[in-house]
Image (cartoon, rainbow, N blue to C red; front, side, top):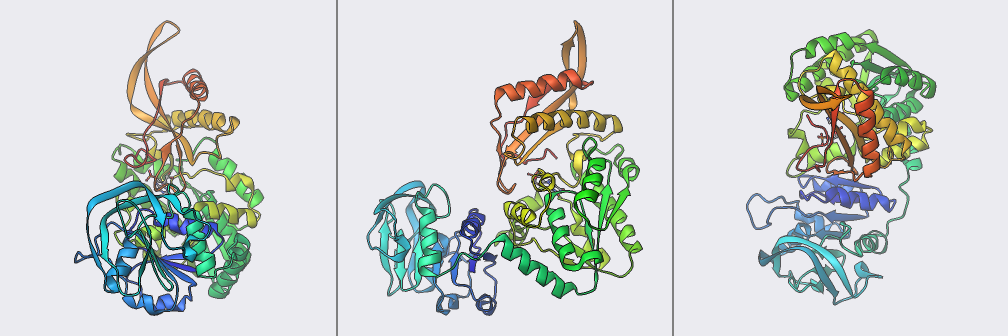
Length: 507
Ligand code: XMP
């Protein structure tokens, strides 16, 4: 395995992903981590990430510098390299010129890090500080026009000022692979098969004969969590599916049928539609909506859980990006933008121990794991759907009538997206009902009706997203069908904003 020390770079997940894609397991740790803990993990190598701070400033993140004495190869990237230099006695200063973007890297000394890399290659730079003097024993191995010290080495300590993890660095993948295989001696052992086998064993050992409950939404994360735990402890797992009345057209019934048919697991189906809709009456503020839905969900879940006696554990489908966000040296941005609701609010109240078997996986790895465990395609490829459901896609008050309209719009959109082969290609595609009306003309008559917005985005992990360049013909067909088939809508608009600065959901 490889340990990645997170100094707060926006590219950290990319480092982790690149390592995992090489079938090598890695974990991201905070700089506060105790060195004994790092040692206990027995990593083959350590990567020090980049970060926005300046090492010579007071509160810049640092890890115990004995990390360089462990005898384990270290690769410092950008700030990580500057930290290495600074802690071993070199100097780092503000650069005369900030360097951001492409640069031509010239390799001066061939080391294992540059095996099979061209002598001149394009790399991606993003730094405001530069190294002035190297500590004793270090040599410069590559330079760019602006940055003489662009790569360094001293025995098994390597540093690069550029970012090998971003795709703009032409041969970045080769450089990372050289570090993993030629320098650290890693082997390609990390597969979903091995992960499934190890996790099932681990869950069995931890939970023994105790009881576990899980909030099942029908999304890929909760389904895979359920399957994994079920394989480990069988009937001692009970899943709870709450119909909050905020699901898409026929979704609750379809899910119920599919879950029963494909997941041969103990599931309780709870109809709490009225409770949710009553509590949402007159509420327009997005945060209030989210909090109300979260609270009722907890109440419903809790009262169901109480009926199952002697529950010890709560299982959650938490994924690695959430974990990374919470340990990041600078804290993650999205946690403070919206109060995301899943069952995260439960443990404190319910005093249950947590099982989160997916907490080291990325979404695409969860999908592969689902496949490995035999999960039906229908669940594996479901696009993410937020816990608060359609309530945060109806801007303004959530009413029965507006839910009906949005369900119809959404059903048409999804049908067209699926029929045209875009469903799997998009991270998400959905409709939003706006609280404004516009004038139109239909059959020679003036109309004054609702506006629907279509949102379709591509993304790897929802941290960033881009609006999907759907073909104009498809957009035209979707718009025509919605306006013709859904009573109460006379205009359709397409959302062309990326995240950031927008978010994926509108509320
Ligand atoms: P935003 O809108 O923050 O969404 O860009 C990022 C991803 O998270 C989903 N999302 C949620 N998922 N509970 C969830 O389980 C929530 O409250 C929630 N809010 C947003 C969203 O659909 C997107 O995939």
